[in-house]
Length: 328
Image 1 (cartoon, helix red, strand yellow):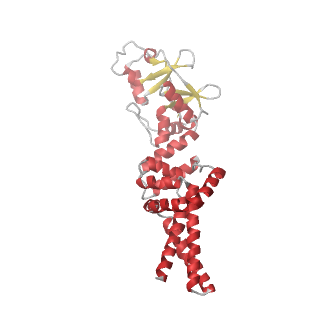
Image 2: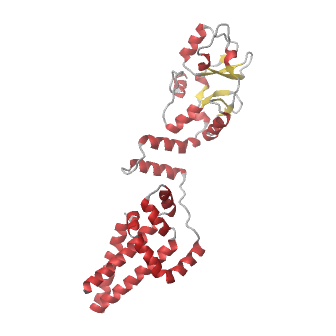
Image 3: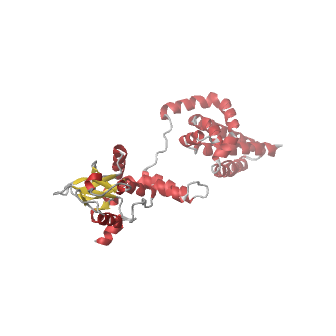
């Protein structure tokens, strides 16, 4: 009977110790997110963990009380020195180290299964734990959420993709990482360089030979400049020529004269917002002297996010920046 009581006290010590580390290691805001996603265990644990100071005070009071009773009990059945050594060794190994090591790995599952015990402990220890927890709440305030930097989020995504338990695959990882990093890049990094941009003169007749030249160039959009200058008048979209009567017509007849310009030093996230606001798909790119240095399309930015080249049915060349390098 003596040994049974000792084992029960040691088990209680292990429970208090394990729950203290396990439950307090769970992030409140992480539990809230999981509870919002209808995680059953998170919904059980959250009401306990959200009262963090009361939970901590209750479990520590219980642990101290049980350890004190265990030491006194062992002292009644053994000599003073032996009881002290025995109590210290048992509590250290079986009441602290092992339960904390085990329960910390399965804190959510164990916390959900023992939530009813914690609720009972709340009631039992509230006369002492309640005022202490109230004081801590007033002094320390609410727990702050964990906020990750951009680089930390990237590392978290990489760790998720490498984990066998993650449901994030390589394609999703690539897109998420692209979305987190594209805003660090500038227009000049992703634009189609001027070297491979074919400019059209507004009065150029749409002859069969010229249309063949457009097809061979392999682009879907062409900047159009006004006669006598290099000012960009508008954009010719090849798709606008399909199924149209072109005899006797010039480029000017099909030009979209709405032209937006951005500087090569502009950030991609700002330009993407401009694309959304203007509902246009192509901007001309200017340098500090407002000279044309290239073009940027909404597809160029999307490519940076998804990490793959996007080619529509009117494009022949995939990587225009690589083509520009070959032509140098």
